[in-house]
Length: 87
Image (cartoon, rainbow, N blue to C red; front, side, top):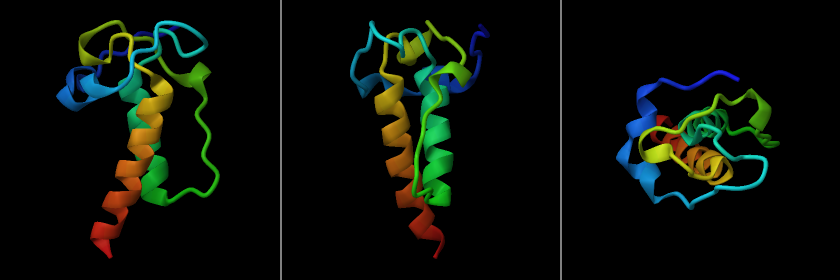
């Protein structure tokens, strides 16, 4: 499995996501999940899906032990919200 080295691993606001140290999302990069959710929100996808298998792992920065599910959901919300700013 690949390891995430992107800067989003240190975005401060991701530190407020709930902890997730168990289950299928364990050690998946919440920053990558957020970005995927944000892109889906920008497009206003009506069917949303997070493929946790496609996410790299991360144990660094503010995303350490954070929920990729919550990160994706927050990203989707933020992406939808920002998509209305362009109208």
